[in-house]
Length: 106
Image (cartoon, rainbow, N blue to C red; front, side, top):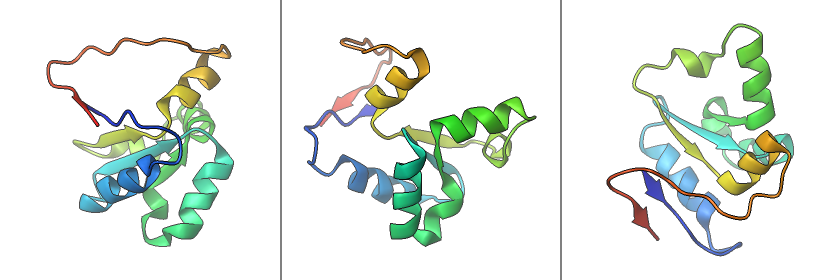
């Protein structure tokens, strides 16, 4: 797992899009809001089929799965993971830990 720990406005989402472009058929970008999903889909229409927001993904899974769940060997990048966690828990997340042997902080 790579962690891009950078200030707001430093290009994290742009780097996430570049990551997605490497293998758009096996990679998925998860965003924190439907507005952000739509913004990215307008900017990168060729990648639109691999960008989804957290709430839409959750809804599709409750309805029996999504096309993303059927991708073999898929890799998922969560853009603005702190926002996604806050939406999941409906709390202000102040601290996190991440378990992984190889973590790259940028």
